[in-house]
Image (cartoon, rainbow, N blue to C red; front, side):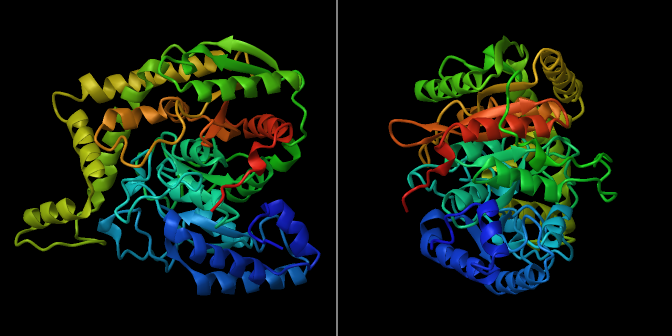
Length: 484
């Protein structure tokens, strides 16, 4: 039996019926990592001893009849989530030797659920990128075509799940960094509503935009992951004190009468024709399942990328000021204090991080704050109003996750603007704090995955999961795996 080919809910049955142990399952995934990851580059740190120890603890829980949906399931963690006693680099040289003294809340909740941690996953440095080429430790390769990117910034998380190196994984989404790589790698990626999942222990890029969410092979696993990590956390002032729904109960397979909005602004000139065809076919599938499909308008979509790259970089400029060579991380002594700051940050940060810090610092500077940052925040309000108006007419908004399939490694590294446009359909969701999900909806003639994006009103993850699950059950795209 190939223990790396199953979903978490399939493995749950095998574990509970004692057909396999968590230790056997964990060792199978560690062997898979050893075999395929030299070609993928998804893992920055592998934890074989800790993983086996956690698996043995999970087996004891299973024997005692105390297992939950994720008990004994091997998972990966994006390396932007702090883990007690385990190196956490954020894909950056400036944190190459940083070992946190505590766990992120999402990590602690997965551990409490009995999950097994295989290791920490590669990412664009400080989550800044759409291709996972900005990692200081080398790019991640797309399992479907090793010459192409896996998307970013959570490229390691998406690639690890697609390559069957982990059953599921955690990533983060600031402007599409869960959904866009999920689309590129043909897995399910879910960005929760802002405030649904605690950000405590997530190394901040842009605090008003960042969210933690799951990658999985199907919607049922994504729902189980979301249940485990959701809920109020007094350690995070932006965490919402609201009950956590039974997300699994939402997976009814029935979307009859569900109002699905298709934004005309999400089908634009220059979009890949095969992507558009696959997404329109997926919309027809939802219509065939009984959903009511209608056109909606999100008129401020065209400004979203510009707004995002002012607000996100401004917040990054503030958040990354803490990496100064004094408190933790890399320190490059260069005589006086100011010179040490400069030398540390010059050596520790990569080109894209430096670019965004400079953009953000400029946008916040005296004389430019009103013209850039304040105006961007006002337009952000208009983007959110567009969504509120649309959700007065529909229950779910449906469209492409990305305008193109995965592009070739190196194809856009010399053109930051083209790279930034990879997130044109995902960024508006973050600006408005909405939940969104990407799921497989087809392949191009060249065998590259295409993702379908569903967006919902705040705290309507149940509706999103219901629609995504119904579509998934009517298709088989999620069952396909790359040949490695």
